[in-house]
Length: 443
Image 1: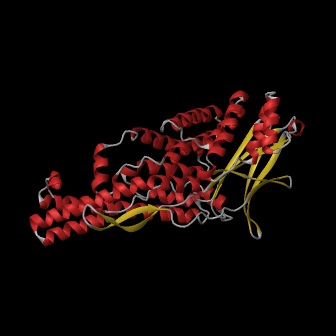
Image 2 (image 1 turned 135 degrees about the vertical axis):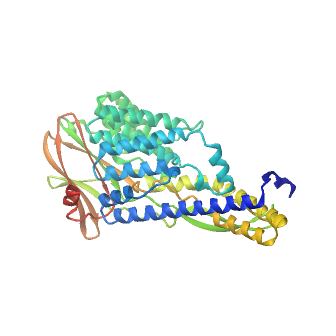
Image 3 (image 1 turned 120 degrees about the horizontal axis):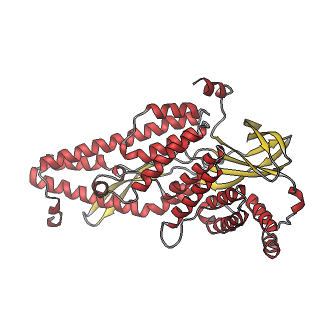
């Protein structure tokens, strides 16, 4: 007991602080859960416009500033407000940078109260994906040079964590496409090579093999650069015979689809034995309940010819893997907190009697909640396809397939130029009401 005298509190003041912290912790948790549930339900109804409106009408905790702007940026992107989306993403990026050095005060609070009192800086995969979405927003506005800057920043971010970089294969792939759009074919080739290697290295982590489209892109770039020996090596590895004549004198349509909605964290409680207090303690831990749902198949239809998307980023898998890797540290912190709270209740009972001890015990249990924050407006998967086309005007229809056929579609008018890349992107979470475009136009 002497070891815990370091707390050195006056019982009345300590009890008040514990109760206040518990109340605020519960308010923050329930507020975030309610907020994400309402927004998500509208996304699941095919109304990102209403989801954005509801989100902007709600108040937000200052400790969730990063998460607030990540959500706002993504919801605006879903409605096609790319410039405004990037303004919000820029705020999130700045806040992430400012939080890179952990606040000592909030760290102490998380050690005594719960993890949710800490400022949310975003998981590592979320921090990297932020750059990808800012790049895609710039591409949608025709600002390819700015997209290139985001990819360079993403590369720096991936190098920040430890001796082994935390590489994202889709980021490498997207970098190559952006370099190719800028005519920097040598850099595009480097990025395509890296993307193939990272997909191979992370298949157990993200569950994605090398996308077929990337295989063709690497072969095409090797042929363009005249690297015949390496081309033959990859043709053998991929079991693909590349034909340079097929795409000669054509332009390319790059279609990117955010498919589905990523997972949402919830809370689970477990009982575990602590030898420090010689009894079982109740811990509150974050969890992604259930397994990932299968996404709907999607395709692009142009002139009655269809092209199936390739999945290039498994965000659901990344989120679950990140939590699994973090869980040992989360559990250790939760157990340490409950030991401290149990010792504090024993000390309160010793100094102020059984009623005060009971109050501390209840306060400790009430304040112990899991940190369930995450960037839940992300899609479940990112999908991509490259389509060679003759120069001209086209309607590119993205179709979402169900058991009975097409369940939703999004039309994009595109202009293809010889030797150039043209981009379209969209986000699909649920069938959209037929009057959605009119609703967006009149809001």
